[in-house]
Length: 296
Image 1 (tube, one colour):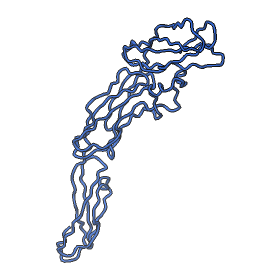
Image 2 (spheres, helix red, strand yellow):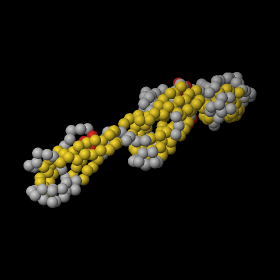
Image 3 (cartoon, one colour):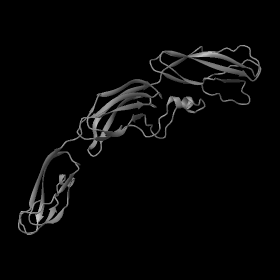
Image 4 (tube, one colour):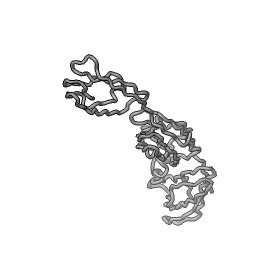
């Protein structure tokens, strides 16, 4: 502001009521200029709206019927984010086995962009991996299946939020640990801080199935055994499917009158696709006689 008159000029900034005007701040907002004096006004701008800027700002001058008008023009563009893939397809996956895919989020904007990723239809409870189940073959889930009080969060994104510098990019891992036998059709939504939600959407699909494992032979014969002496036989678990399968030899429920005890040093494991696992079973007779028992 320049006072070109012969008198002191008290000035005051006149606020505007437009939505875009609220993005601007002026300092100082008032003062007195002596004749010939200059006053530098600092203008701060933080965009909260997208679109064209065409704003008139006024400074009233005491004793003058005509305000001083400042016109500001410009344009606020949204962030330019791009995905390097159109979709993520996990294909056929095994129940409880985590699978990971990656994609890249690129920022071609001249400013940094802070993002957050989310999948609206995902649950919030902890998902259970087969590796956690394998730690304990006495877990009731081996007999009754996994039951959730809260729907599990089956998708994990790393990182799920962050800031990408101008002309920078971020590689993101998406891990699906399915606890539901179903087909998946979900979307990863990209929210941008200060701009909006769901600016980008990435389709995610896949199908969770349980492979059919087979045991050979069906009957293990231990022939003659001495009381309280351990005897070992082995059987095979065969996986003829293209996905890994998790097996668990359910712990025996023993009672005082149980005639035969059985156990395994490898009660749980994973059989890779088109592979065979060898499972040892140790039997110990507790009573004399001929017995048979089911190993589950």
